[in-house]
Length: 302
Image (tube, rainbow, N blue to C red; front, side, top):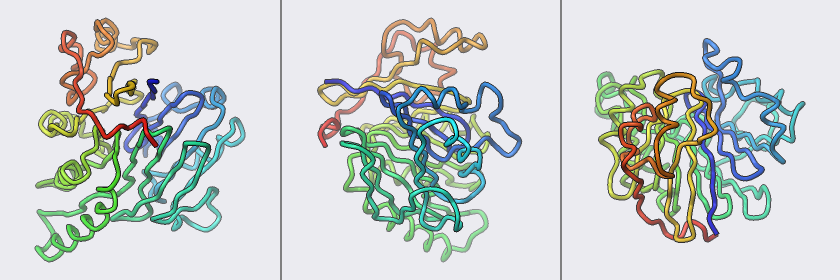
């Protein structure tokens, strides 16, 4: 039996994953200048549609934790999961690296390490594995740091990633931060080679959408597709068929706010993504193509 999830990018490192009557929200943040506002925010009336909403906060940095999420409890059935080093008094079940919590039958979350504050999260929903890295990354500053500092950062990053190499990850949200300067993509590249997620979606790039589009264009490989979702409220549907293949499509119920969005709605076929390394705004050029993702190790098995 096939399974389908809907992924929506909000802003920066904030994503939601809709799975049947559940919504999983990771590191939601409206932005320093409230880049999310009005219809682009995640609104109470949306949350009410779901039987349960699970909110994950990887750490206390302002760009990963927006206090607005704690008001959602007033409008919907919301549960919170936060890193164990969050400030005292923060609402939510605290998780340290290595902790696993069973949310429901066939739904669990495990916390993994980070190379900054907090944790990263691996969500397992009916055999589909979704990873949000939080601030797990190879945080080198090659244009400023000493060789010793870079080597130490690399060791810490590889140590944190090592346990994830044993996991079969279908979708990974991972930082690709151009502020790092030279070789800013080194952490994401290593993660792709070591962990081999089937689909990687870059995040944490501070408005540098053109850089991320180019990174996605060149980073895809035999084991991993890289997809740029730079726009606020960009969404994709991912269907896992009975053979374990990923099929990606653009939600047809999205309103067309501009000519580029309208062009996307006119793409023919269920699978417009073959060159899925491109940002959504360029996919209309590829309407004759279909996606061809590598087969995983039976992602529908628990």
